[in-house]
Image (cartoon, rainbow, N blue to C red):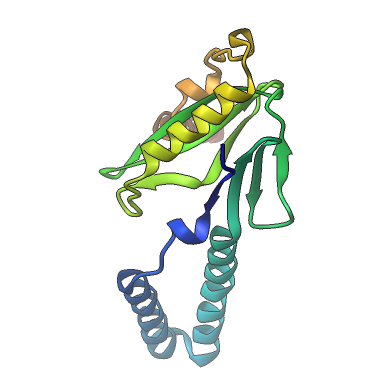
Length: 190
């Protein structure tokens, strides 16, 4: 089988809508900076935005994953990546994430030590739709199944706490704890 390569630069394509959103943010910063805060504060806001946007974009563009005879190599945009041999990989599936009316899907591997790794470049979402996602995921599964002929090595891991605690549940729990602590502090001051 041929080696598979999935790159972030093929997935995260810049568009006019992204550029227009960034220009809108800069326009708001210039307006607020000049009218309310002064020119120096305006440059600090624009500089802070660039410090956040440029590295995040570069890391997303440089991220990649490779699937081949030696296993799965994952690189998140910094360094040469880490290769996980087929003997280390216990399960491969797709993670679905829902939020704000959108859905995204990312292929991920489960390792022998219980850790999980998403595969950069092998993702799809409503913002960045990839028509070949399911076919590419099936190709990764074919590599895995042919590289681990013993079915006993392919074991679906059990659910962990992070599988049950979604970001929404975590936010609600944090809010409840915050309100309870605030109530106790206010009650103690009386």
